[in-house]
Length: 121
Image (cartoon, rainbow, N blue to C red; front, side, top):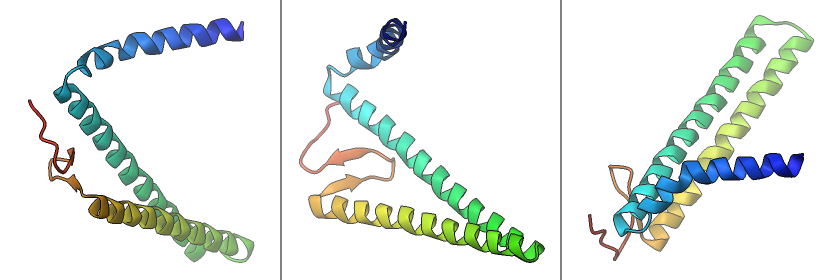
């Protein structure tokens, strides 16, 4: 039963991705696919950083409003929020350093174009 369900899921995913695969035959299709993936990842990173900031402020509210054991729980939530923000911003900085070292441009239109490659649209 599980194998049949996996086969159906794979078939459905393949059917949904068929237009993407057909468009990937040209260079512009590949660049459009990479640009779309880059925009989606940038939006997800922004949402994760926003969630970490919200967790930090939620811990701050818990810390200020409660007394005793609940106060330490708020402090722990704030610490985890700070750790999450630090890790995400650090990884983002490492990726930016690698992009500049390798020579990958991050244009203002959120496109991904390595140096020396000119896309033909």
